[in-house]
Length: 361
Image 1 (cartoon, one colour):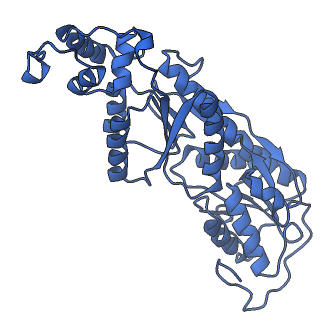
Image 2: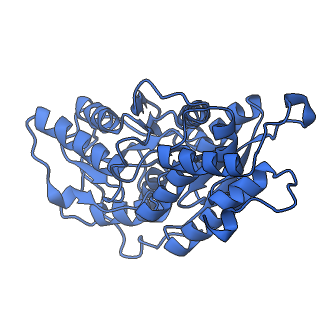
Image 3: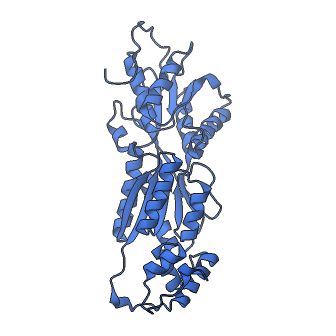
């Protein structure tokens, strides 16, 4: 027995907070052990039970103090996109209805920020974590497991641990539908402004694009595939690169709405228009694209619904429930608006000063 573990000589009543401190776990984890819940690892449970027996802890009557409100951590890599706002909107709706509070954080892909977030999480005794398009170091995942804090991953960057529930969208079928729509309009030279290749969703959208082309008897032309990072600037740069080809594509599938808006701006800067000179399809169906000029044809992914399901799943895990399936993909849907049309011939000649970089004109 360590000095830290010895019961106080005064025989005073030990608190659940003190038990948690001595066990090196969160207060909710000790509460789960006290209440006989199953969602605690055997090693942690044994450690907490030993301390409870050592200190003679007795559960207080339920009426002695009000129950602590549930607190959830919602963690993004970055918070600089309307995409994030849609996830937050879904999370907040269900969390509020369940009486749960939400702490929103961004770790910016930096290990130092992630470790600082973990320290803050321990101090505020979070009841669950929703991780969105982010990656935590294995040691931080292990700390969550030791603390008994359930984790759900939304739109995972890679393949998470087998026991971590994930929620995503049908990205492959969305990429397929976007490309098939352009093919059905008569386009045969279809460009792709791809997302970051490290993300599963980017690779799935590219694979859907490729599958549609191959089904139509067309090979992927590598010169028509340009990199992007989901931000408008990369859509502008990618579309500009496609327009500079000796034979530009007649249509482009941008793997995010923001890149699609950047592509439309690149057309405008050259005196061109969508869909007259190039059809453009996006991916997300963010609220703003209904009001773009022209309104954007896009693939709707249910971002708010993904956030809602993430809250329901993590609250269920906190109650000791396991999801019916650890991997959930919500359906996507093609929404046809005014940015796509059949191809209308070759590009007009361009003045030498027609190209300007992104930014206000």
